Image 1 (cartoon, rainbow, N blue to C red):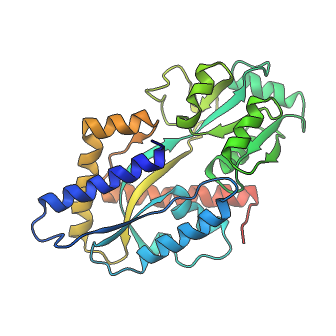
Image 2 (spheres, rainbow, N blue to C red; image 1 turned 90 degrees about the vertical axis):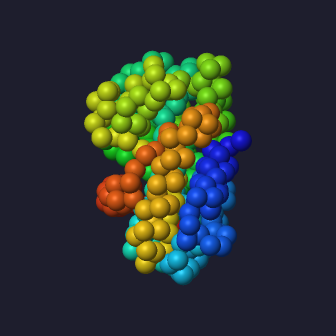
Length: 301
């Protein structure tokens, strides 16, 4: 079961729970739209379809019966990355609550003569314009994280584009490219087999499932935190009482031992926030990603 499927199942489980306990709401089935922006060959198509899907949610009646699961890219990256958006996700959608977050890790071909992030930086600086990074999709979260790392570390990594995550990781495994940012779920076996080395976790603290991997902050990059959250959103104007009710069930689901086990099995970090707290995070992330997209100079028509 991949991460997206796990999150979708949890979202649906949340709505099933709502139906089972609420008195007046809901009184009919709730429709949930699951929208993602995957990297790779279908990235542009996925972004367009994601925009269409969340636009439909934004324009639905604000009665709590049409909801959407969107990720970081849909809400706080696309508005600054894409020249044309059919809606404004920051004003036309109401944040309900995060289901989980998928953090990024910088991985390197294990044959590169570097054991730590700082050793890799020294290695790359000694060979400017010769050490390369595999990009699985222009403007994706991993791609933008690499631009940010390149700038903050003072490197001149050569960005090599690939048509998807699989060929990008394959190129790193084969030694044609040295590093890339990935979510860990699909790639942990390569680490266990000694084919990839993890240089750093773009997380606020060490991941419990990879306790020996230091964060970027621990290695001289304070505030370097990059993850993709998957969260529930409602149309603007949805009554606050419904938003709070849905948020309560999302939070309860995240505390459920079986649900947490399912998330962690897919290397997804459980999240627990009020609707207000999550709204503040969305605003902060919008400021962050606007700067990163602008500094990277990336735009998609």
